[in-house]
Picture (cartoon, rainbow, N blue to C red):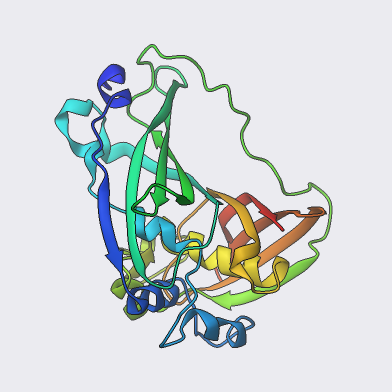
Length: 282
């Protein structure tokens, strides 16, 4: 059973990482940059061979690390965990290359009751070596095998942003990254395509970070004039799988100045991939 006290105090050590321009380009391609489609022309700035502009969503790649949830000391039923949501808050842009320090911790774990699940919120900071923050990440994980551990109920309302009866202001149809690019960026999980409705053969599935990056590129292009420095906050709720090369429709609703909702659907399968996403921008 989940050991609440142990997990809340989990001893995450700071991790120093270095990345170069080629890593910036690799991450961008893993998030679909450079493919034919509505964003192709604007993608050039993210793939420049001399000084590529990092996508803010690249912070999730830099923060990616060991699968600590499988440690027996946590008590987590790790085979039943679900990556349910992700968000970034950009404090300042990542440099084209350099060193960063990743720190992290557990913000809270809440109980949805026996035979249901628990939900865990984890924070990660990607900062300069002297501690100046670039991006703060929040990861939401549903622990399907750990409900009823005796914790408090989740006080946070579930993210709901998409208007019930309103046509989107923008709709972009684009391709998910191809397998080769996604694999090079570490953004692929190999699973049977039969996991998805209507599929008949196997092909790689994107990790959440890859989906997150694909949607973030669309948000930046549509709402920020393709300037990633204008993105303040981007939060998604994962709703279903996405496979390499699939066509997706990304719909955007402008809710207020500097605030928008976003949704992603796999076109051929007509299945949700992301729902009730929130974009805040300058």
